[in-house]
Length: 156
Image 1 (tube, rainbow, N blue to C red):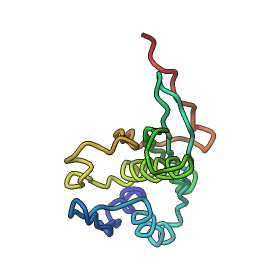
Image 2: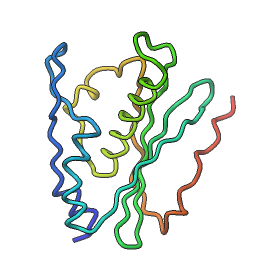
Image 3: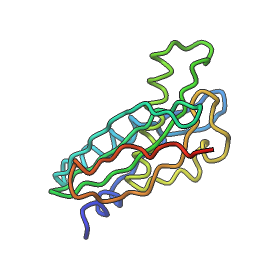
């Protein structure tokens, strides 16, 4: 069996967090990382996460990239979260941290095929400060240098 497929099949990332206000359970980036670390060790795989601020049109997003290295093979998935500088009750560092965690969660979900079908994020619109975009498909790359910059924004 392919090592990536084995990791995807073994990974169980339960929804360990409860939203008291909405009375629902959800998983966050930390829940996924906690569940996947022993599996990565078992399969001698390495996981790297990076963040980058990107502008698309008039909007600013935090782009998270999850890279899984298995031997010489590299698998890459990305997730995006919109940065809302006007989020009341949060300073700039908190807004950026929340967007990073959210974007990383979706990059990891794409990489490890974690289904969010019954996640509250799939049922309700995302909060205004952090808007999620579906992660890109996991694409194998020949080496770490294969990470490419985002495409330019579409012309109007």
